[in-house]
Length: 110
Image (cartoon, rainbow, N blue to C red; front, side, top):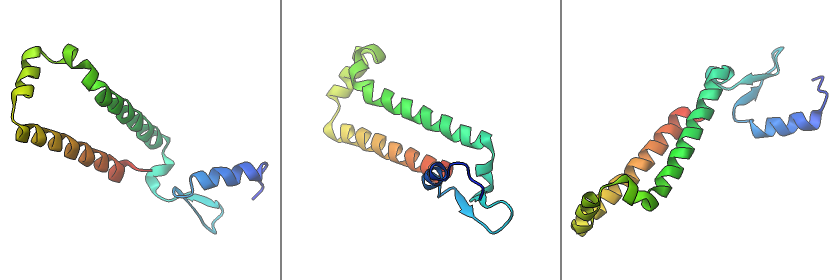
């Protein structure tokens, strides 16, 4: 294989073995899917992952910013609503978060 540093190469392969497969052709390593070989695809997946990461951090920090984000009348309206409505809103938020996460996991995983 004419490798200068085989230990590093084996370590790199173990990290990305789901993306590659070994063939008997002149090029030993080939991408498992054709889209993986384009650098713009890999950067797009990286940027989308970072955006989702920071959006998740914002969602986690939202309870601490209610007073600055929402008017006091809206907060009072939510506080005075029934327990069933609060449960429905919470369930809707969780299900939308799960479905969005699954959408990105299924469609944009490397």
